[in-house]
Length: 270
Image 1 (tube, rainbow, N blue to C red):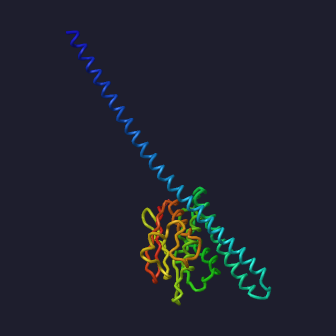
Image 2 (image 1 turned 120 degrees about the vertical axis):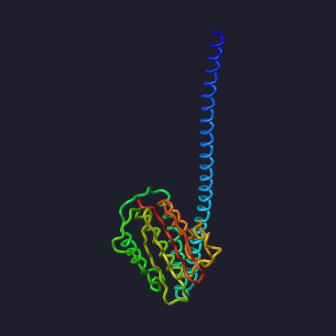
Image 3 (image 1 turned 45 degrees about the horizontal axis):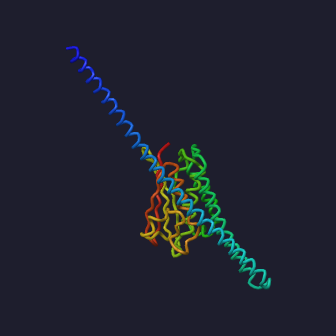
């Protein structure tokens, strides 16, 4: 009888130990599985970052190098020419090349700032910020042909990072000027604001050149240019998207070729 009881007790204890070991093993397997998944996701993100960095270095170096070679070539030609013959033409070409390089360099600076600087969230008057950007752009090439409209109420204030919001809106309004429709006499770009329960939204609409259907999914890609005549570094909208996402928002575009574009920015209320 004693032996039977002892046997029963041992079986019960072994059963408990086996159950605990099974639970521990399951927990360990879950942890390993979760950690493996996290490592895979980290590797995917790292690979994406490395690929983008490689493309970034190659393309930016190529653009900077090409511009410098163009400037140096034009300078050499100007030196060989009669000082009164075609000199002004060459100097104008040099100026254009330098301005293109400035755009590339400014894009690189913006990309670096967005990637490295911490988010500094403070109350921000969007109406005043947009007005300030419009004032700064009024002397940009082509700005006189575009009616820039700020439809926000004067008191519209949100919590956000001023530097990144300035970068986002500056890029979008600049693009509306650059890609205005030269066949229209009433070119415009306007900014509207709507507030929801948990989010707020900016809508930047223009009646410019618009974007072809097959290009709309690509416009936020790094170094994407819709065509050979496209102005800029090819980084502007990529940087805009990166900055929007750093602020917890998302961006989308609706466009019709020859009619214009509507860019929607949506952010959580902080």
